[in-house]
Length: 384
Ligand SMILES: *Cc1c(COP(=O)(O)O)cnc(C)c1O
Image (cartoon, rainbow, N blue to C red; front, side, top):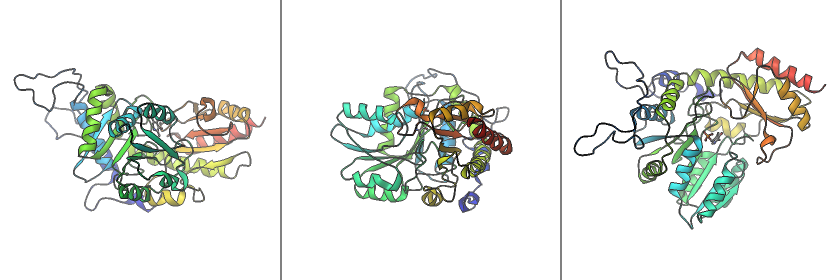
């Protein structure tokens, strides 16, 4: 945690208050505080077909509440910003990339980002888009920006947890006429607010810590109202990658506890990272909150919380597999950000450039002492 954690908008409510109230409609007597999901493929629409609610692929009142909630967290107090929710993080990412880029244009992606990006790259190239990549660390994407239409940033990157200086990259991109999108999945809007750092789009998977219970797939795009966001909205309508009302409602319900969850999970992640730090079996330990982590300096300037994901490497694949088997309170699963801790040997998927013994650990809301003890015990057992 750093000095930003206590930050509040001048005269405005604090983050916890904002999270529990985010996106709630004006109270109506005898109605629930958060209205239930509206299940509708179409709405009554006599006469002239005017909005807001006409057909269920275009708009839904349950999305409207959720979009308001996410917008209030991604860009508090800001006018002229809108949010669009999608069926998944990948639906949101694809909506930005495929709505903004045309054949003959260039995009800069991270080469160490989310594992589906190489598939996205192949699809963009099939459509005639030039794709350039560079690592997140050291702001290396700066080197390949010239002439690009869009810069895609993932900071912290998944799973390597490198961080780039978002403000610096945004300035360089805007000076060259490029738009900037930031994948804000790992940080959540309580950890980082890309629009305040100058980005044009904050894009994320709500499947992870935003909703936090491992039971919903969701994505969103927040951006300034204008032609780029209008194109994203058109893309959602064309492709139809829309969330179901139940998922949207569950997500909104979960956001009420976002601050409690991230504060608890991130503080415990720090405790686990500190416990792992002195261990001789552990190499390549990464957590942006650790003062000596290579990401820490830049992270502390642009992030308000450092996330719940830790990564490290054990000597061999077998050692990492034994470690995962020995854990009692940590489920072996992909994904991250949930209230139940999860971990996996990332190399089992192929695709990420990581060592065989590389482990990504997502810290949940268990008691910190239980988790630290479990992780240390599993480390010891894995040596047997
Ligand atoms: C999981 C993830 C995605 C994809 O989200 P889905 O909801 O699974 O489609 C995108 N970016 C990052 C950084 C992720 O971790």
